[in-house]
Length: 358
Image (cartoon, rainbow, N blue to C red; front, side, top):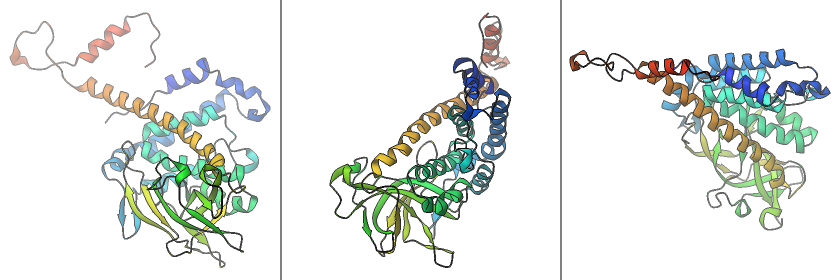
């Protein structure tokens, strides 16, 4: 297995020589940082990736999550990774300091995510979803919602998700049928189904909080009637205990590229006992959700570049050790393969007077 999965030299060249990232530290918002500190953050991210994510990526891919007795079993490393990433502030990299975040520049945070994804895309997906879901509540929810959910999501104790897609609607969100019925107690009864929910259920956390799109009964038709709700798998009871919130896992799928992260189908409110908590104003849910959707699009790009990078270094390692033929001057077939051509290719490149980024 290749020991190298990305190039810190290449990454720093892009950050500092192409994008002049260090210049951001001139602004008061990033005044606590300088180039040396940013380098330390990147180095710490590499160390975490190498020790926490990289050793398990093959195991997670070859042994995907399983649904056993209504519990989604994931690789044991997921729980450890979420705990360490949460405690280290890696799920709150760009969060303002007043909300106990690291207040890092977005480009540095994305670079750290890139490093994590090169090491193990499946493992990195869990924390990325926690980050995006928590930020929705931070930006659009009230203080009560924030206190109920965000600290546990940022710490890696609770998983966050984005729950949009439904079996009959696909990507046509105007056609979703999940409903929200208001109650006199300040919450809504949620009923419906969601499908293809990444990290939608697993035993690596104590709880899962779904940022879910639904329509309040009587709402306008189409996308104008969509609202956003925080719907936990388990809600906090009057005694302060976690109890079932009538969100059931009805199946899991495995997506190519990150088979180690479960993709769930959910049944919500089958017993009319699922409580959802409105985020922001009614009928503005899709507008709010676009924040996380657009972050996810950037994340997909980061993941694609990361997996391509890791694949390149794995291919390079393989090409360097695979014997491919005899030396040109050796005519005797009995001598067999005695060299690999990539070493000679490297030597030829070393004579070129161009800047090489290895």
